[in-house]
Length: 194
Image 1 (cartoon, rainbow, N blue to C red):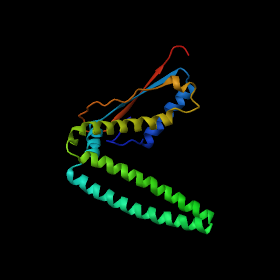
Image 2: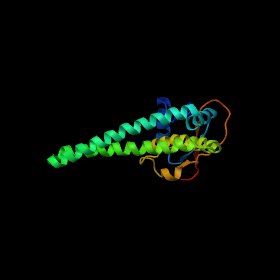
Image 3: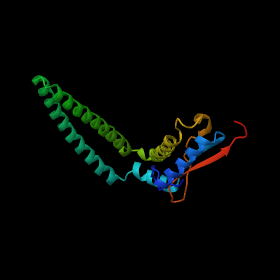
Image 4: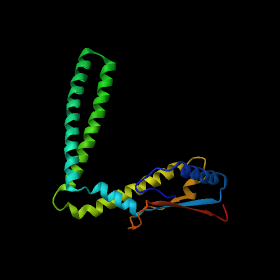
């Protein structure tokens, strides 16, 4: 199965092919499958561009994240005062609605804080040395996401002994020079006795 660079979702055709394989695994108890992921050069190039920003891009993103954080902090403060007012008024439904929105805002704030920390880490002096590690980590995230989608479609309760018959080879980072995206190889094999 071939992927466009950095894309982790399956096309309808690929999903259909996988459904056929899943059906064969369900019917043919002597059939096994090995699933391997291979990075493409396009995956590596795109991942590198996403996690190793230029100084200008990093500053622009930093400003946007700080603006988003300020807006969320203001929204959080307003929601907190609305929740307190609803609580004081004894409006149970309003309290639940406000505190739910307050929790969602707190989660978003936490995500922005994490993004700010990560971005500032890439901007500090000497962080260029970690660029390759960041690229490798992003590539591994792409690999794992693709394999997780395949696993969710293949490993189903209807397949007898799926844990013994479906093998996922852990992804590895290997340099690739081709401009294409990655691929997943599905190797089917029949056992002699089951």
